[in-house]
Image 1: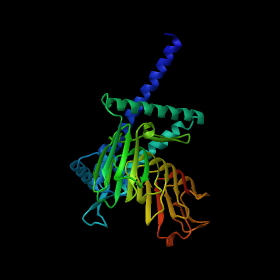
Image 2: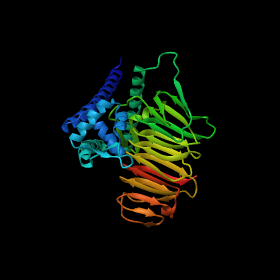
Image 3: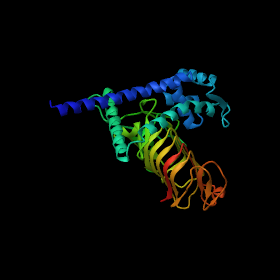
Image 4: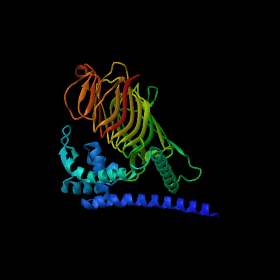
Length: 391
């Protein structure tokens, strides 16, 4: 082996070794944050999810963390006793208990992660754009390799099918609800008027567990890393979900019944044509990377709520559809019906004029308040690029 080849091998080993140390340090950092506040790792993760959702039931928190009902109850008790959350009665169903984060305490935990992001950004600011692009490429490739190796550890036995399908009868179901409880990879949705069943799903790559009960279709992928690493480098969003290139869910929903769609643990890419669907609501928590959806004409007030930040969103609606848009956390580029909505979180716009200071970027179509069938779009956590237009 030549000296040059040996030096290159040593350099490659050094880079791989440093990457492993960085991954381990990330876990140690999260543990140190948890220790500082007298919490467990799962407690911090639950707080992050609850902060993204805004409020949730104990059952939802159990689903997101993968804990048993008993373990989730004990965790909730710890968080309440430590002053991080409060229990409140559901205003709709007084028998149900809702968990709400106490913002001041949750921000204490988030401050450590914010400090780490700031320090990391400061450490890499000396690199050129080309060098940052190279780093971003390396990180994405490393994540893809890690995911592939992780998949191999639990690989499907030889001869087993790589794809899986799922369906359920429509029966007497009056409405449908699609829930991804633990995050989602690449999801494609469509409405199907000819579908005889409630839904039909085709999964490729990682196969989730699917449960159907009283019109609610619950999809759960295997638990991912508790603290997914994300960074904005040279204009590119690099995240743990970037390596989910072969994990896909293609889902057809019966358009004869109205649907509520909920993605609780973040989504890498959500696309689809819902133009013929009866959509009652759409919620995505935990952050979204890329969304491109054809929306139907609303038949009432239809809320669309996205929390945890967003990278690239495109929502297309029928011409003449009324909407209100609110963005909390600032926005980089927001375009509504060809008009750029400027501002970094200081005013709400209606047409060409401001309505009132609201600490947010926003937009309302004229006549919104007097229109019964409309969209109310709320995005919290900030946005890099958002386009809302008519098709």
